Length: 326
Image (cartoon, rainbow, N blue to C red; front, side):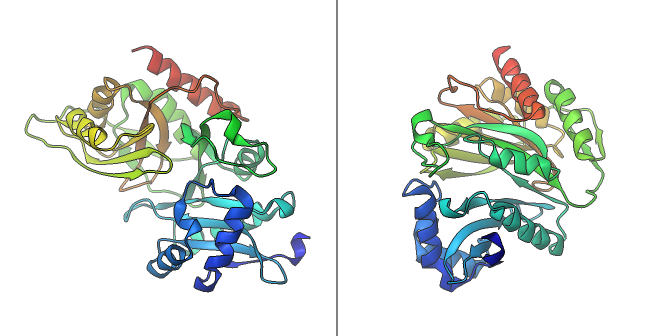
């Protein structure tokens, strides 16, 4: 069956068919609402926000999709995600073929790697990611909202919010960098860097001057009830600024990204731990340099996610132990 499937770039004329495919895979429960809006899809193709590949049958029906997204204008990596395969065509390697097509696009774009986020709803995507050479660098808890319907894969709706594993896939040698690793996460971070083959030199962290103000930006994913805060530079007021953003945008999950090129990143970690943030993931080359992501949850899930591999289990164990230490 898979031999008859063509993998090709998404075109503006595919918008309606792509919406149909998302409905076949998730009903109306998929968290990225724009994939249910053909006009929005066409707009995102036109301005480059969506760079996707699709799997099509001999009759032209779209039965699979995967997208490439750039997290930051200066990032040396991209994100791969929004992967779907029609239930009728699962088990035939289409996800792997879609991924291979986007890997070619990453090579053509000169990126050193990509990040993707296999769900813990089932083992399929975790297995594909690691067997392809991916390095597990974190676990985003409660990332997928309750009610997401994994058609024919054991509905997630009955299990509440679900986690995803953060995976970094190296593609080419990354530049050597100096990073300011927070001491409480240094052992974990060094182990991740070693597995990923990244050359990093840890420098001594510092505290910001009282006059140094935090610079940050934020965005709210209303359907996912996820607030994302990207810190460009850590100042003495970092916890106050994050508090201000959270008051204006109530969410079930908050992510704060701290640049490890900032000598004050460790200060930011310690101040945000006072606000119940804890380790989420290490993201190599995600912005101007590497990024440390912290997470804060309205409620910690009563059950730990189903993690296939030991690296992800150890990262989550260490993160939750650090959180519990106060």
